[in-house]
Image (cartoon, rainbow over all chains, first blue to last red; front, side, top):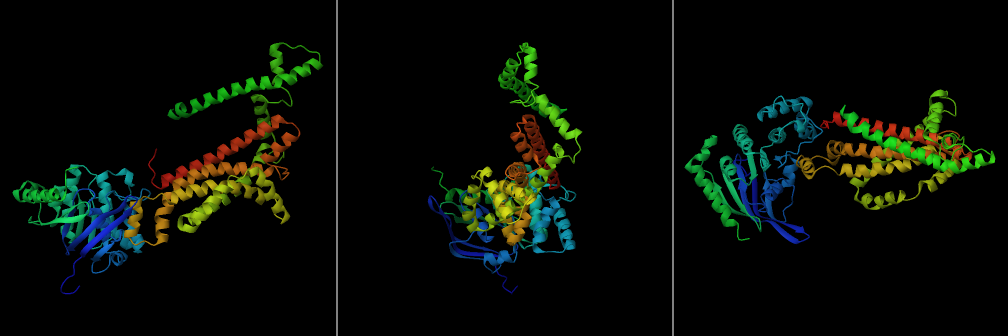
Length: 263
Length: 292
């Protein structure tokens, strides 16, 4: 890297319009965004605000129709081809015919890593998400939270510096979610990865992020950007502090401003 | 114990019902001929004796179940398997062409499905023809296949197997197209984020996802193969096979032989479907399938 370390993600005037049978739908419009290395950025907003679409554009799963975006200084397609990011989907999306171990190995097989390197990475990442001992289990033998942890391990085994997470804990209950949030923060601290995290939970966004991007729908756009003043060390009970509540209130205001509840 | 109550009891009750109905029909259908016989012989048997006679004619219109059972037992267990009257021998002849045709058909079906899933042109051009191929009555096509192949010197097992192939490739092709397209969007997106090549996506995602579909369609295909092999024996003047037994029985009005050949065919079909089902279950278990 050069002296002025380039942004991990940089978008300007980004727009994406889907052509549907009901006419064009503007999923993203005029999105300007810069994400620096080591940041934990949350995207929050009601459904239809384009937060998932934005993540998918970064991942080259959707093509923007206007504006520019770069990932690690490259186009998203080049970045994908360099395997610049790991992606965690809303559903664990584990392959049911593979054991947990083989699921984590999937991206490694595709990258063509040696068996020894695969085994080392599988061990390391499964330990990282506390799934040691479950290597030989099939996905259906694990709870929803464990499955999602396995899918995070799979994304981590990839060992990219950028982690894209699309509502990874959305389908889990509150208790499991708190636990995984804590684990994710520890992991972020240890690995110093850049994380883009889509959520629709205000406490989750405030608890995890260094920066919260509030989005609003029709057309999908960024309506507010909130820098978190919380320290890097965040025990769960930080959520009771006035500082936390103040940020949460600001996020809630941002969401309300961008969204009309008239209908 | 559970499988006894859940499966054996219902199946047996239906079987008993069928046997009772069968006996009733056997008596009713064989009665006119028996009355004719009795009149010419100037006999006036009682009701019980008359019913007994309708169930023991040598060439009845509808043989009674026990006549078929006795014939089936004699021709299956009491004859040397090398005898051409042995049902085991005839079943084996039909089975060998069934299996060959089934293997061809499964391979062909898979190849067609892979083509259809990966080449957009084939998807649009091939599918209507495949469906059309199955609307042609096999009974019309079979003699032509046999005659044409005989003209170029191909006789014996291959022509019969090809008719089985014709019937069995279809369910496999249709099932595998569905199976290869069955992966969820997120599973495909995942491959995309890994920058996986099309062949990696095929072998690591599409193929394993299609396996359950393959076995389901193979169950249909193996039964269709058997039908194909039997139909294939009809126009060949085949000397052996279940089809040949059926034809010979029809020529000489050996109705009991026809029925016992039919039973043999059903037994073979049931065994084939069962074997495919068991193979499917073993593979499913090996692929981490959840025990039902």
